[in-house]
Amino acid sequence: QVQLVESGGGLVQPGGSLRLSCAASASGSIFSIAVMGWYRQTPGKQRELVASITVGGTTNYADSVKGRFTISRDNAKRTVHLQMNSLKPEDTAVYYCNLKVTWTAYWGQGTQVTVSS
Image (cartoon, rainbow, N blue to C red):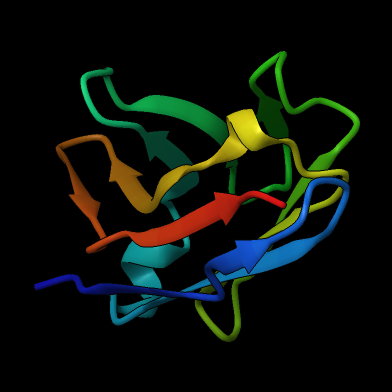
């Protein structure tokens, strides 16, 4: 069973920064083949992809966060991070960590990010 635990959310002013972290309890063999991602969701809207990263380090970002957010992973520690800079009120959401392999996907419980003055 895979468990994902997010941390690092909170309240920040517009223009500020936050760093989200996700620790995976997955076995090394699973983590070593998984695509890791961060998604976000606001009330009444579908969950959307924010950023993803492959084992080899290839990244993909939503257009709305390009140039402001950076995703990274540490395969040895089985962690993935999302550095969020120049935050905007529209970045306010619950952020979810995601681990995806060919046969299934796992989700964390989510961490709230609120950008407000």
